[in-house]
Amino acid sequence: MTKQKGPDKNLQNVAKDLEAGAVNAHNAQQVQQQTNDHRHQDALNHQG
Image (tube, rainbow, N blue to C red; front, side):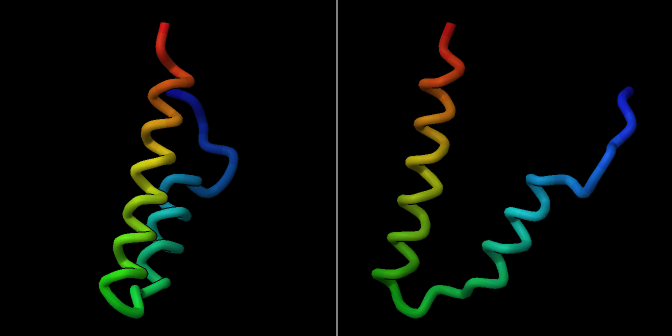
């Protein structure tokens, strides 16, 4: 195992997302779509 040199970036992002509560259903959908877009782009970047 490697030693962690700093805070876990994934956990920081999750905590940041939890702090920002959705104002309404439209805002919640926009936040979810942004997450989905990032996951999709990440999958495209890691295809062999």
